[in-house]
Image (tube, rainbow, N blue to C red; front, side):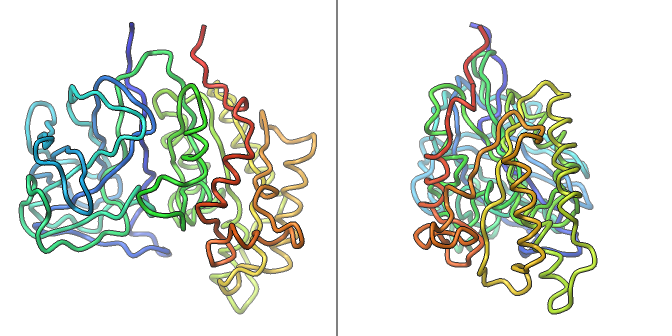
Length: 387
């Protein structure tokens, strides 16, 4: 059987030097960080991806280990395996670059948790980071690469440097990339449970799987938080190994963030519905040009959100216009999923149903994510191997 490298986990990253951010950037000096990920699919070997995409100085990795997690910052010491990079245990990642570890001959199963420990001997500067990692990570002083449990550890609510894992899988394996904002990334779902709606949908599939490239706060047309979706499409979606489908939710932050940033004054830079429709059309066209399937979704409800300035009559009108276009006959997508309807309050469809509301009126909880995953026709994600 012919095999090739297929993405089994992905985490999209943010530039810590952005002028506006929802999540606190940070650096590390002479520390060990330990972070966990979950493989969405399996293979007979794996390799780890690390990134210094937004660093301003070369990033020194004094050692990297892979292990099976127990709980918290703990690992099973019998599983502790040093990673190598071109045969060496240490590596320096140049500014703006990503590196891939040497293959580890270790069978991986779908749903398996893998813990990556990095020793960072110098000053990293503000780190390339992700908003919503798979689970809470940990940082501790010194070199604790092989420690069964990190001593004097602090929790890391954001992810750092670790961007994914590839597995050696059959060459005809096909996967989908979930691409967009916090509704994709799974903000406000329970850390460590893999309960974003793409992850819960992935577990319903009988062939292939879904990897997540969402960024909470991300926009379609404007940078910050993260590069805008059209700017990161090639790298974060089209270039993901094994990708055949792109599943998209984007636009709420284009509508709401300008109002939040200018509150209490009206925004001057909020896009119109036509701007968003043009951007979504460009997105779908570029996906099709790459030979992939583009699946759109309606923009989720958010009336009554607790965030000042986000919910405005003008913004709600834009959301309705975009959703009407997405549900009509003229959109360019191969299919559109009405995720707004899956979580809307039947009595007030512009609001999230109470039992699905994460508490802020803008995001869904684990149950809301499950409602979306359960409402999607899995045949839209035809990830059958090519015959």
